[in-house]
Structures are given as C-alpha cells and as structure tokens.
Image 1 (tube, protein in one colour):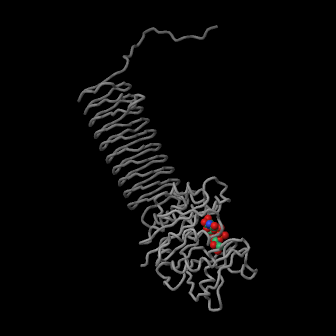
Image 2 (tube, rainbow, N blue to C red; image 1 turned 45 degrees about the vertical axis):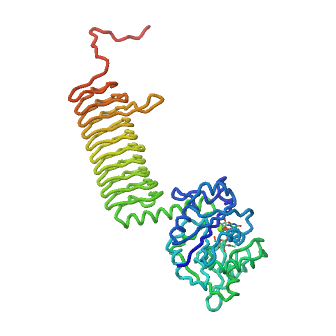
Image 3 (cartoon, rainbow, N blue to C red; image 1 turned 90 degrees about the vertical axis):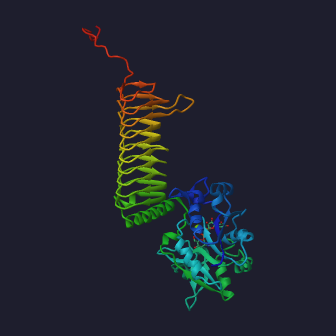
Length: 455
Ligand code: UD1
Ligand code: MG
C-alpha cells in the first residue's frame, strides 16, 4: 500500500466545553481525545501523523509529545481547508492523505483501513453516515446517478437540502497531488466566511474524480465532542463496547453499564467483575478471578483464582494465584504477593514481598518489607520503615508469627520460626525458634480503689 499521511485537525478551542483546557486534551477512558485518534492512526502501516494545533498549541504539543510525528500551528482558525493548508508543507509527494479530527475520538482502525483499501488512487474517499437528526452537519448531495456531487453546510443549505439525512463526517482520503492542486481553489465565500474543506467534493466532481462514500460500523465512531454532555455519552458508548468484548471473551460483569476500562485489560476466562470497578493502565487478570464492587486496579497482574473483595485498591503490584484480598485492602506500588496469600481489611502494603501462604489479615501497615512463607502478621502490626529522613527494611522469616499491635522498627529482622509477643516494639533482630517480647510488664495492684465522683 502507498505511504499515508494522516492530518489530524485539532486547532479548535472548544468554547462549549467551558474549559481552560484545549478540547482535544479532555479525557475519554483516561486518555486525551487526541491520543485516541493518534492510536487509531498508528494502526496504518507506513503512516506519518501531522497534528494541526491552534488554541493551547503548546499545551497540546507537550501533552501529546512523541505520539505524533509533526505538530503544525494554525495561527488563526479560518476554516477546515485553511487548517489542512497549514499541514501541506509536511505532506509527502505520492502519498495518500487521510484527514481525521482530534475531537472525534472513537474512529475505528477497521474503518480507516476500509477507507484506505477501497478507495483507489484515481478516486476520493469520504466517510458519511445517516443520522436521525442531521442538524448541524454538512449534508451529502447526490446526483441522479446517486453519485456524490457536493457537501452543503447547514448554514448554506436550502430547505430541501436540509431534509437530507446523510451527512459528512469530515473524514476523507485522497491523493496528495490532488490535495495540493485543489486546496488553493477553495475560497471563503459562504455563510460563515470560512475556508471549507468540504468544497473539495465539488472540485473533485468538476475534475471528473469519483467521490466514493464509505460508512463506519457504528455512528459513535464519527461523533464529535463539543460539550461535556457529549463527552460523557461517548465515554459510555466506548465503555459499553469494552464491556461487550470482555463478556464475549468469557468474563461475567454484574452490570456492563457500571464498568470502566481506562487502558489495556488482558484477561483469562470465567472471571466475575462486580459493579463500579475501574481498570487503569495495563492490567492482567488470570482465570477464575472474582472482583467485588468498587475496586480499582492499576497497572497490575493478578493470578488465577484470586478473590478481590469490595473496595480494594491495587496499584503497580503483582498478586499470585488463589490470593484473597480485602475488603478495603490497599496494595501500593511494589507489592508482590506469592500464591495463597491473604491481605485483609484495612491493610496497606507498599514495596512488600509476601511469601507463599502468608497472611496479614487486619489493620496493618507493611512497607519496605520482605516476608517469607507461612508468616502470620497479627492485627495492628506496623513496620516502622521511616525515621523521618530515610527508609529501612523489615525482614520477617518463614513461619514466624507477629503478635497483634506490634511495631517492628526497621532495619530489623524477625527470624524464621520466631514468635513476637503481642504489643511488642521490636528494635533488635529476633532469634530463630524463640519468643521475642518487648513490652512493659503487667502489674496487678491489689486493693486498688476506683476513683469516685466528688461532691
Ligand atoms: C465540519 C464539516 C461538516 C461536517 C462536520 C462533522 C467543514 C466545512 N464542515 O463542520 O461538513 O458535517 O464537520 O463534524 O469542514 N478546525 C481547525 N481549524 C479551523 C476550523 C476547524 O482545526 O480553522 C477543526 C476543529 O477544531 C474541529 C474540526 O476541525 O475539530 C471541525 O471543525 P468545526 O468547526 O467543528 O466544523 P463543523 O462546523 O462541525
Ligand atoms: Mg464540529
């Protein structure tokens, strides 16, 4: 296939977003709108992406950075044809040019491929869609032979043309030579005083070039974002599709309307995901995983048969097979749990390696720690890893038992098979096969009298 230059128009301010942020940087599924378009553009082989910026150009460029090949500024927004004109110096000779929009985020790679493959180099391709309510869009005008002859913008259309329900999506493909030859012929003599890219259609017709229309698989693919209501609607449409794919691949969702995937989710089969779970970044789930309601999983890998109970947060962590987590557990970055581990309610872990079968069941903080196999950490145990300046490590050996409400002042080691008495403050390494106890001795005071109320 010919090399492809993809121009993405992203200069508009997006006044109706009521925002200081350029419209194309508003997020859908956790990513800027423009990033979605660039991701779709990247699926085209031998492609070069040229992004036309305007409002907030510096911010757009620094946020998107190397996801695009070239950024070009359109100093004033004089219309879509003018925006494309600004990109022309970066267009290669003998290339196919595809025009996309930074605020139309859900364009599918399949639709782009279909367009580039079916439109021959002596034709021009136009993506059109038929809408129940075509208000605001450019209408597709066809001749007696049903060939496309022009696009008429809403503001320039006659009452008869306004009845047409087939509309221009704005997405088009044509040869770079044609674009370079035709673009200078476009003027701004229309209702909006703008240079309309859509005038290319009538010019192509005058040059006897066939305009071939292609339709997307779903109308959401070509819907633009103009305000926050539309943004939320597209977000849901996108999430519904994610949910559908997940269910088709063998995962059950309690409610596909309450599921959010903001990144890549790689799953086995027979998983169950309850309502309001959010998956961010790159997440891998094994098979037979059960996830309770309101969990957030970020950039983590979860093994087979894991049970994650309600309100658990897992970030940059690895969880072994058959682990049981939560409810209300928080795994912070660098947590690595081996198989059959248990992290219970109100337990926070950070940079913690936990060996096979070990349990931290209640109300604990375990950070900068390495736990062996078969360890039991009692309720309320804290690894004191920080002296206000530096962090230190706690090591807990195989099969040891840390009694409730103990503080382990790092750097410190609880040796294999040792037992720490409840309420101890451990500041020295413990000995293998022995009990370490570090708490004030209890005294029972006989005959002691309870205070009584005065007066
Ligand atoms: C455009 C089409 C219309 C189509 C509709 C689909 C034209 C003349 N009209 O109309 O036929 O039905 O899209 O949504 O093309 N932009 C720039 N620089 C400019 C002007 C626009 O970068 O000078 C960008 C905008 O940021 C936006 C896109 O181009 O992303 C479309 O511009 P917009 O003003 O929204 O065009 P519409 O009137 O919606
Ligand atoms: Mg628009």
